[in-house]
Image 1 (tube, rainbow, N blue to C red):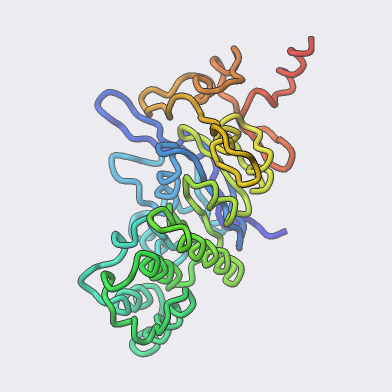
Image 2 (cartoon, rainbow, N blue to C red; image 1 turned 90 degrees about the vertical axis):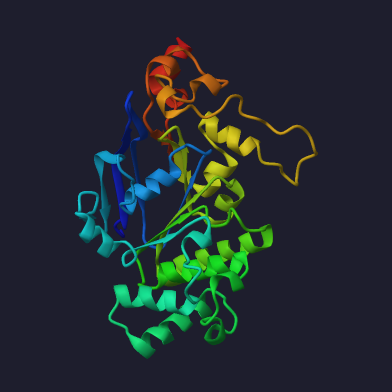
Length: 329
């Protein structure tokens, strides 16, 4: 069997403050295979973007990786010095951010920015780098790339700018691409184009993609597997069809129930009561228990770990054998 390209094991990320140390990521583990798209979904504040930042070594001080390990193609990268991590970031790991204007310098032409990235991470220079840049723009669907190379970011639409950012992320032929809310600022038709583009890149280049989003529609369309995050933990992970159509964790069920469906008559959508807890107010036991319709005493006292549920896993005491036995007694 093919080995995972990315292995995250028991990752913890903390942010020290004057009053307490806040744990933003609490003991999460997952793998991504070459050519696989792993969707990471959850509400704002769940820890999705912090997870991506930890993988590429961009946790801002005083934040820190407080435990666990991150392995890229078998090499541990979470303890590398900054200079070594910079050589990996951009070359072996590409990044696509939510707002393309934060990734593109408005003062430089698109072609110059792509050529600079190519020169920084490969041996290509001059005309060879330019040809590579033109090829990348063509691959991500930019029409007349030889001409658009000389355009500035403000001369592109939002969707076209996002395509340029994808081209930048692929400039050094990375093994892994982390896409953080890449379609949020785009209209629906352009979202579909970007999703199709990323799926094709995963298939054609065998690139592993970590797709971070809060949009379950994007996940259902683009991902092979889904990790659902809540309050810094993964509460469910499994194949996309299983999580979307038969979610196991009550939080996943709430997310699915909040999505309108065309095959059902109109009515009130299911809403999850309450809100995501603040980092300094995460409840004991299962962090979701104050909002969970199925919570019982054990949920309040003990923190569940992921346990197998069919082809995936869910962190919920409802699937604990001992609990089922106690309930039947």
